[in-house]
Image (cartoon, rainbow, N blue to C red; front, side, top):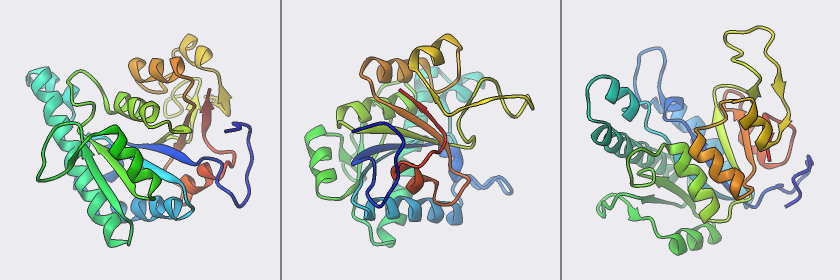
Length: 245
């Protein structure tokens, strides 16, 4: 699709992968890993986008429950820790599925780690068929392998299903030349080329995920989840966040 900025009544993107950090589900006040109100708010926004006819694939992290790298720092074997993190993404995926279904959406949860009682196995053709039939597909279990982040999983699934764009929803409203939390003079990019993001060592996502998108010309949109309706605005082609292509 044309990647120039445009907005209107028709969504700019037909098929998307939305990458959510597990941390967005956490209640920062009491530390509850999955806050019911936050979960519902996110699911309501996702459903609104799906109701527009957009084919939505979701990739959720597990950092609100367990993060493999953090576990390694505490003495947990890295491989074991990564598998624990992958299981955490399945827990989050089940929470998203349950909430979306209660809102009236049709959802399928697929896991890269076989667990037939909880989720379908990830099968590309089946996932694509679900999307074509208007079902929201949640991709959990990472890539099924240790040493890969959920960013990489999102990049992989976006390329596999032929998504128009990979949307990464974060706590920051785009990509800056330096950390805006530490530097008042940080400058936000509206658009940046892959090679420039690499050259300037900007933390778009981990290097494996970013390289996968760059090699396959998968555009990445980084935007904030803090504003209500931000997902829909992004899908409609409004100027929001930072576009990498």
